Amino acid sequence: MKKTLAMLLCLMLLLCPALPVFAEGAAMVTIEKTQYDASLERLELPRVKITSLPALEEAMAQMPNLTYIEFGTQNQSGLDNETLADLRARWAEKGVKVVWTIKLPRTDYTCRSDATAFSTLHQTNSKRLEGYQVAVLQYATELRALDLGHNWIFDIDWIEPLKELRVLILSDNRITDISPLADKPLEYLEMFNNRVKDISCLEGKETLIDLNLCNTHVGDLSVLYTLPNLKRVWMGDIDELTKDTVNAYLAEKGDTLEAYNFTTKYPTEGGWRTHDRYEIIKAMFFAGEYISFDTQLDDSQKIYLRKDHKY
Image (cartoon, rainbow, N blue to C red; front, side, top):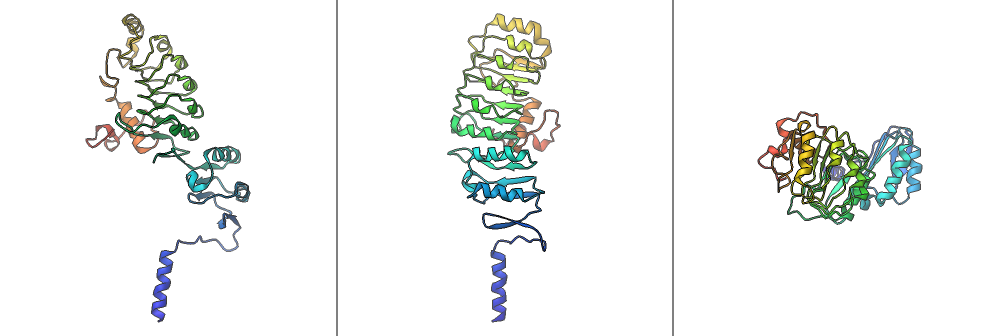
């Protein structure tokens, strides 16, 4: 009998979730009926539903070492993105980083609010997302690389809070206005197959290295003259762009470019996607983490060269 009871006790211990172990006499705080050590630096609440935000913040205020708090999705935490963004702003001033998981509506896509790279990894035949579904990415304010190619996006006003964007792929959408990109430190911009006419927001952008505007409506190249570090430009299949305009630009700036293509009917033809920087872009989106262009990739990171890649 004793042996049976002992076995049952062991089984219960194995099946029950581990209880937190606290130092004797440690100060405690209570969050949603669960106690936590008040001396914690990191507080992770991925599956805790918050029923009272004031009570949560009161508990946080009693944790003098707290520097990081993490929540799950809106459904898991009971807090919407706007509420969490406000919480992030308030507690950033106190040295606490607030992180949560952003879920794109009516999709299986998620993105951490502190992610530095995100991609839908879409191809031409992928099921397309609409603007309201991707607009929640405005809360991922640390994004440096974003790929939303091959979707049904009409405007990008929501992109304004993403101040750190360096790599941006918005190809094959329905975008007409790219003015929200004016203050972004873009290095790589892929906008082919869109309805863009005006690119004046890119004027003087010293960071821009790679630019693809194929199959748009950009007939004026005056902005390109003001891009001192532009190395590659693809602008084929544009009815509004004349040969004289192209020839005049190449006569003055052609020698400063690594590569260009103003004649292609296919926006990635002629080497656009066989460049070292494109290798790095693919690596960062598959890893979900921004990688700077001066990084030397090892062979395992070169996604586009892998025979099993599906991008």
